[in-house]
Length: 223
Image 1 (cartoon, rainbow, N blue to C red):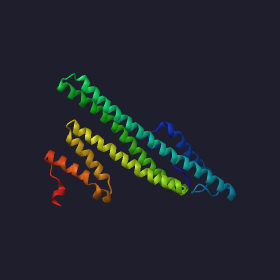
Image 2: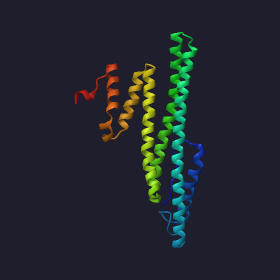
Image 3: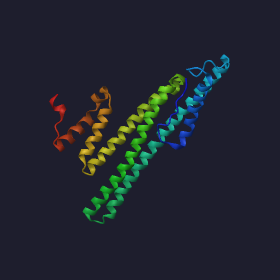
Image 4: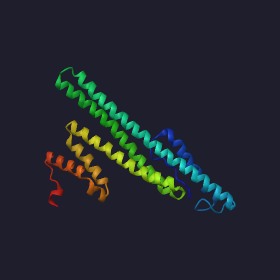
């Protein structure tokens, strides 16, 4: 089976290796004269088995690169949170006892922090989409270990992205922009499966509270 080139996430250091997997698989398909990328080449069974095994090994390495990409984005998120905390502390110090000035500087620091967290959200989104495509393209070449690794990673990326988005919503509340916070939380809720929605009592409570604060009718009240 020909592999597609997985370019969905934006981790440039790791992207080269992933491209190599996709391009090599495409070369096999183009040179084979067969729709599945393996037959009609004139190679004997042992050669084909070796090629399949080589591709399986490359797919396994690619899965590891997705794992590393996830760790890189998580580290970036942790650093962003630390930087935001320090920026808020500095803003309060720079306020020099002037409450109005300190509040303005803290608000500015939080807005900057939100922009960084939003860029991280985009990376989680692309990583998740890339993983889904990787699974769709290459699942035939997954070992049991790789299959488990990819399944777990999909859940981890989704959970971490949700946590990051909830942090963004918290910041919107902190800077007195409840409408934007509500939109973020509603976006999270809509992304959940029906089963996940049933279990998301805290999330639903936050949405309900923001709607009440904003004077927005909650459709759930009529159900």
